Image (cartoon, rainbow, N blue to C red; front, side):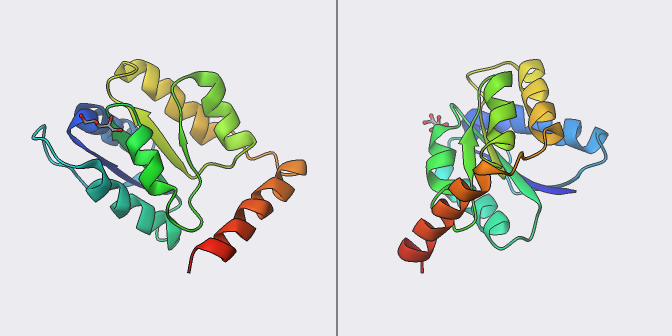
Length: 149
Ligand code: RB5
C-alpha cells in the first residue's frame, strides 16, 4: 500500500511522527512536505496529495494541519477524493466503513500523537462496508460528473 502525506506548519510535527509510524507498518510513504515549522499555506500542500489520490497514483492520502479542516476543504475539490476530518476513533471507523474515505485529515493541534496513531490504525484496518453505501457514493460521483470537468 502506498500513502501520500503532507502537512502545513500546524501539522508538521504530527506528520513527522506519522511518516515513521506508517513505515513501521511496512506502508510505502510519499512525503510531499512541508519540511519544517515555518508558516506555509495549507492549500499548497493539500493539492499535492489531492492530485495524487485523484489520479490514483497512490492508494490513499493523509493530510495534517492545525485542525484538519482546511486540508479537507481543499482535498475535496478533487475528483475521486473523499477526504474526512477525523478526530476520534468512532469517526475514524465510520469514515472508512460508510464513506470509504481515501484521504484522512488530521489536526496537529487537536489530538496527541498516540491518539492520532490509533485513529490512523483504525482507518487503515477498517473495511468499506459497501451495500447501501455504494448507492450514496455513486450519488457523489454523479455530482462530480456534473460539476468537475
Ligand atoms: C494555520 O494556523 C491553521 O489555520 C491551519 O493549520 C489549519 O488549521 C487550517 O485549517
